Image 1: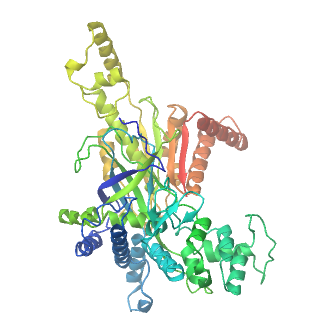
Image 2: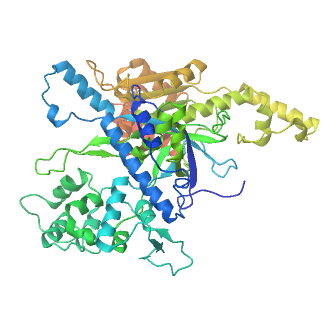
Length: 592
């Protein structure tokens, strides 16, 4: 190992090795069309070789701008192929109610696309992970946002995308007098160094208002940012028209997901803001974190020359903002900056066409990553500890890593590598030793045999898995893989809840726990008698809260209810869950 560790400020440029849609029925047709469009591009491979290389030449900046245009076209193609609503001129097409219902259902499914992506890791163990860890991804701004700001800087200040600047952490200059700072192009700075796409904050609206040359626009921006002054503290702007300023900001900015680019378009007198002003207002692009859904102990499949890799799963963020009668720019389609970008990069793999691999010569499928280890969301070291895994939606992703890891651990105990596991303490999955290299005495060998015998006799604990989604025929993620784990005996029970099945009651994972008597009794038994560890992972604080409340209610009824009244039983159940959290037996990984 080189001793190098990759971080947010020093990421690893990973190559995308494979990708697939996990959602059923999400066809490969659009990805195939995107690949054909990219292959028809006249961009040469030499100009596009180092897309993410920081030291871009003028020619490479021009090639990057061309790739931005290709990405924008690809995103438009995905939008057309996966509509979220009927075109306005097709509202009354004479179709019957059933056809309309099915069409609306398809629009909903179009907005729920889940992708599993395989990323390469260095072969020198400088980027390692364990099940439960996350990986951070660094992505550029959306192509349309980058292009707007670059055109704005050219029009108002004569600044070209190929012009070199220096970022020293406090100022931005268009000269290169500081030899300690590496000069970069304006194009790279706008593309990768400032957040153009996140919803704009109130304080940033106030700072932007100082660049507005139109008095009405300046007043409107300060009204929207009324509760902050130049120091970021409260200001004294009064409420107007019976409506609070907070309501205006929420309706106009937050609900419509307006970014700094949207504000600049709608308040054009602010477009004279200089590059230094943009850097003074805007933060850096935040990394996106995704749970790892693989195990480092899994098989050593070599993909395109890479022996080490990991997998992540993510939902492509794609939705319509709410309609507002007073906002002509409302009800617009919004996409995740990272996930839509990744969908485009993954197109050569999503199309299931090996010939489309040549597309990677035009848009290199690379992404900058760094590990984000966790201290709490870890598998128990004791294989005999039972597990209750609760992961609706993409919350199931880290549990695929858990199950793969448990399978590898059990397999290793039954293989000739068991002695190596016992002697090394931990197996990193990369070193293979010849028997002659293990220079041990007979007494040491007897000790190893005893350790191997002990490990082989270890009983692995039962694992119950809870999963929930909307439609069994669309977003039932990893259905086949979980069934394979059940067949192998890794998963003891699997419970699946579907919340949008036509003609059926809405079912969530907590609904199954509370309504299925056998399930609820087994869950309490595993927690209180088998001392199982409980893991909850998923999107949305409400899910985590509701599941925790369901488990607390079951404990109150089935463990403490016989000896206590309802209030006392609930208090004891709450304390029991709190104690589980303190001891690391009740772990949550919830994101919003």
